[in-house]
Structure formats: structure tokens, C-alpha cells
Length: 205
Image 1: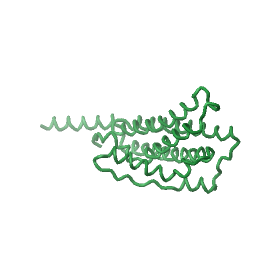
Image 2 (image 1 turned 45 degrees about the vertical axis):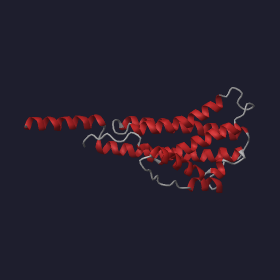
Image 3 (image 1 turned 120 degrees about the vertical axis):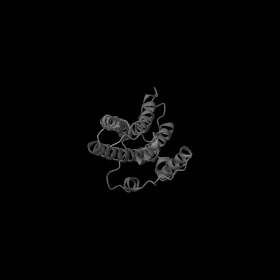
Image 4 (image 1 turned 90 degrees about the horizontal axis):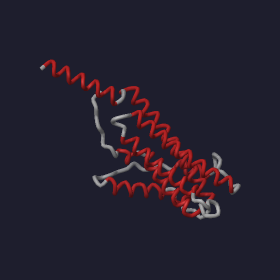
């Protein structure tokens, strides 16, 4: 297989990256409204939650940007992103525990509704950053009845479900990249094969 260097920002088309941005926006708003001084006097919890959401988005972008040159690096960074959302999920779970709040069970109508909402396929023009911003906000609006709720327990539960969805997406994405690696090899192998092919052509000349 020949070496092919792809567009480094192709992650804009990934549902995992789009949903991760929805989670990041929702987490920032959640922390601004509900992680107050009484709960978090040192602002460490606030920072950790916001940074976990940010790291999830950033590692999906960085990993996907490395797809052409290192599938192994891509898988490692996607796994780091998955771990970041696990960390955020733990903080949300603890928030609900501290309030002795209900954690939505499978079958809860709100949980099932959030789980079933489908993301639209991106339709970008050459102004893909402009279009991506509109697309992310449009997808977020599908969850706003929960994410913009005045009840912190509803918002925390909604973010918890979105983290679970995100991790399932990332797990599938990592498995898909592993399958690609098995079939086509890595960047170094393909570079070697391409160099050998070029040397054959030079020898023939």
C-alpha cells in the first residue's frame, strides 16, 4: 500500500469529535453554574472537569491528525481521550453521590432519549471551520433540554450518559483503526515498501 498523507484536520467529520465538543461545552456550562465555592473552594474540581473534557477533544483531534503517519499513535491518543471522558464521568458520578441524587438507570426515559438521539452528518464547504462551529452548536441543541436544565442533577445525569456514548464511540473507533492496521500495516512498513518499489524502478532504468 502506498503512503498517503491525508488532510490533518479530517477529524472535523468524526462524530466522536463532534460529540466530544458537545460534552466540553456542556461541562463548561455545568461547572460555571453548579461547581460553586462551597463545593469546590480551591477550584480544583472545576479545573479538573473542564480540563478532562478539553483533553478528550484535543486527543481525538491530535490522534486523528496522526492517522496517516502512525496508526499506533492515533490509537494511543484515542485511548487517552477515552480515559479523559472516564475521568469526567467519575467526577459527575461523585457529584450525584454527594447530593444523594438518582443516577439514571437503563430504561429511564431521559437516559434512553439522550442515548437514541442521532447526530447529523456534517456537510461542510471550504469554510469548514465556520461550518464545523455551526454544526457542533446544532448538534448540541438536540441535547439542550437536558444540558440547559436548571436542575443540576438532570444536567449531571445527561453529561454522564453523553460520556458513556462518547466512550462507546471511541472504543469502536480504536477497534476500527486496529483492523485497518492489521490489513494495511503501519506508516513505517508502507514507507519501506514504497522505497523498495522506487529502487526497483531505478534499477530497471
